[in-house]
Length: 564
Image (cartoon, rainbow, N blue to C red; front, side, top):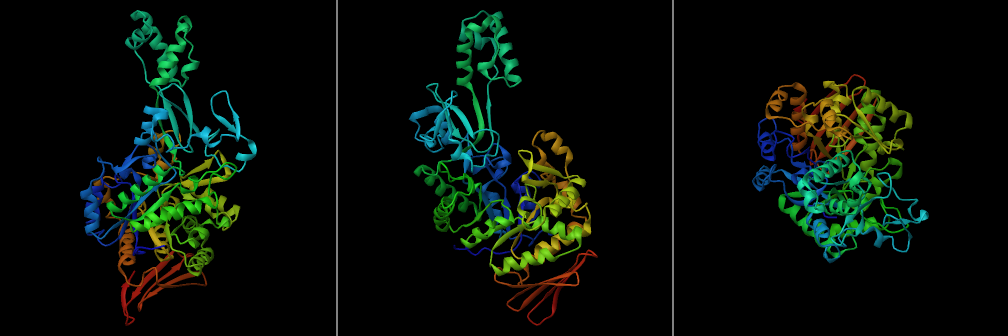
């Protein structure tokens, strides 16, 4: 794959409203003396686009979110020498997208009716039709499928004809019914005002507590139930993320259009979100279906090469499964989701053996990775299986949760999937020396460092944000939007100043390159990383037991040009 001159210098990671409120505010922060030269790339999360749910990961269209960003902001980043990493959600689009709304409006007459996956067409001949109008697949055909929620992953969509049609819906969905008033019921049922108002109150009370229209008890007005149900169903609205049908030529035209759009914004790297869910075949896995997944990626890569984009497929899987290795062997950049947990394990245990072993593996297999400490999700733990023992993973969980973190379980089962939601600074017990050690280790590990904005500012767990978000709001613990005043205050902290100093060194010193020679030694508990490129040498000496480190940069003549 063409790498399109991607540098391995540090990359900022934030939402467009994370630092000040708009992307323009972030541009101004990056222009400050304290930040100048610290980052060569910026991963802007997808609320940059026209989106509705999941703070950006339910895309209505890839047009810019006019409330948060403008082409002027993007041009300013380009002028500063900052290229972009942007998201492309391969598996799904919002129900509010032009394509899905056309289905709701036109039903069978919609040109987009096969843009998404009609569940019954997909499973035709492979199951039994239920009384509710959707096919229940034969048990042996779905035994290896991974569903992210209870029940079958479908959303029943009402066509203009009144028919309800099931569409594949892997992730979030919600159906909402509008409140009615007396005038609505007078017009619909030809009732007097008093009676119409009683019906409206009955309906609204039921809807408020989540009762479906056909289950509403209407008492003396039961004879009007069929008319009321038909009316409510015709007015229903949806939220959700609907799976795309990659067998549709229209989807592939859409894919190319999106990549062209992202390139026009200044993207050099495109993160492929949820790509492993996109290929689906009856009887096969619906997650990382092989060989279909690799065929999908290859076809997307053909478009990416056309627009000079590097692809970064995003997938969480255990170390033991070696999916990271498979992605890299197919010529893609890959995420180092192991590093966040490994560094905490090394710092808390005072032992860098596994860090060295993992760094050596990256170097030996010539993998190009993007690594990180914190991010918009949690600290990955599933990924560590096969690298750390279950006991050490559980110890990590207990440590971070004991410091205010929150555990994410899928379907309530830790043995299937878990991560810990916390700021990285809080996960390290809000200890400045540990935070600086973690940053130094990240910057000297092989790969391109991705830096979560809250980590730079030594952000702490935001428990109040979790409370405000309610159910499933655990991720808000590490997504605090900072005001410009809070940023100015944080810039006075030594832990922030020293991180920025390290980032500037990592961004600009010639020893750092994807082509550098990297060697790591572990000498009596002291990890030593050495990067060499075109005669320049950068070296980190890190003592994990004493929580001390030194960084030195030497020029072609061996003279010390940098020391921290």
